[in-house]
Amino acid sequence: MPQVELKGVEGKSVYVETGLFIGNEFVAAADASQINTENPSTGKVLASLSAAQKEDVDSAVVSAQKAFKGSWKSTAPAQRGQLLNKLADLIERDADDLSSLEALDAGIIFRESKGLHIAQALETLRYFAGWADKITGQLLDIPQGYAITRREPLGVCAAIIPWNSPLMITIWKLAPAIAAGNVLIIKTPELAPLFGQKLASLVKEAGFPPGVINIICGEGSVAGQALAEHRGVKKISFTGSGLVGRRIMHAAADSNLKKVTLELGGKSPSIVFKDADFDNAVFWTTIGITANNGQVCAAGSRIYVHESIYDAFLLAFAEKLVGTTHGDPLLPETTKGPVISANQKKKISQYITHAKQSGIRLLVGGQDISGNGNFVPSTAFADVPEDSRVMLEEIFGPVASIAKFKTEAEVIEKANSSEYGLSAAIFTRDVNRAQRVSEALESGQVTVNCWAILHANTPFGGVKQSGFGRDMGEEALDGWLTTKTVKYNILPSEDE
Ligand code: NAD
Image (cartoon, rainbow, N blue to C red; front, side):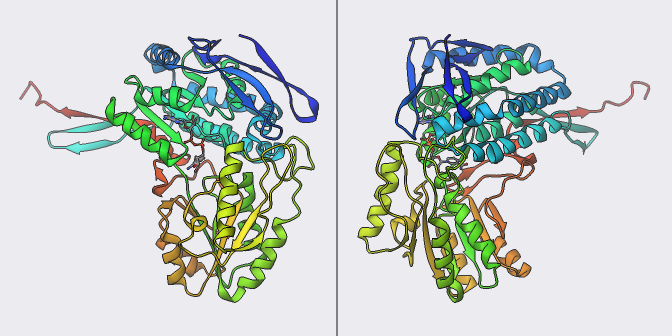
């Protein structure tokens, strides 16, 4: 299969394979189908990659099954950990290439990809590498004997990945899946698949046996759907939209009842109380909606501010949002990249237009950015009604909806009124209030005096329509294991 040469940071060449990575080889799709990946800063095609069809998904499953039944099952747990550590070392070595690829096709600012996403991926790989030889069961007393529980891998699993921070989210799934002893098929996002082609080369170089990690690019409705329907796949770990999450659950129910975990979207509240450290709250709430252009499932897109500091907050927030330099995410001076696609730009712009037409107060942004590339201004609306679309729906773009509140009880009710429950942020100096409010919020995670910081040892995932299952932390490992109970009925001694 041919390689493509792309120009990364500082004009350095980055080479990526173009085939599907199955059984440690790069192969063409069965019917030679291809997907073009585009640069969202320019709209130009970057590369044509093989696009997996149903037959290719079948081949990947066969390759993974062979690996699972073969040497992988008897590979010592510590060796699984060593392979994950080796992969981490290689990703660290080639971080510039991987971040260049995320800048090129996902529009992620190079230094953010390298400094945040790759750094987090490395932490996660090394964290789960440590878990590989520490997976234990229990010893339980039962009448006339005892039982032991064994925690075993599920077998052939699949991970379906979105485009918004594709390498990091892939590693959230790959690291615990492999530490637990599974074999994995990763379906990369069709809008930002380049990282996966590079990752595949590193998987091979790290020394994973053929078939243990397979990486395929393909359309969601074709390759993703085929994985969801496949009877040979025992689990799907999915991050993406609620619509597709539902399709995957249907497909699982209609096929082999495979285990499904879903990390879906959010409309996460940030609550600024009157006793908050003001500058810290402004800093984190602006990061919460501008990081990765708001294309973050945990984006702090609803901001509730106590009425006593509301006007001052609006001024400070608006000031922080202006003055970004949009442009090529590979360049050091760029502070704002493009959103992923022309469609995504259109969707975000429609929300902004609708809010303006509904008479909602535009605080900052909201204008069209003309010229090449999918650029959207960081935008905030103030005094946003609770029943407006920009307050209720996930925009997945840099658009904040701000409103004021009077009492703790009122803001808890507003925060919990969403159908989502992924993440929430509280800003206060009062530890009692932080404890009370974090208990009352319906959310998979709550951060106090910061926004959505990620750590490899802390579980991340949602409640309500933000999904179920967890990435990271010991809990993520549980999601990739099944428990077998073995009971011993101790027979009386033959001497008696
Ligand atoms: P998406 O749901 O359209 O796609 C996600 C992945 O699913 C892609 O790989 C896609 O190819 C695949 N897919 C599409 N149709 C499929 C099908 N029928 N069967 C199986 N797989 C299929 O989402 P997106 O547009 O890539 O990402 C944006 C959405 O994802 C946003 O709505 C956002 O809220 C959500 N998201 C959530 C998280 C989280 O951690 N909770 C993280 C990132 C994105």
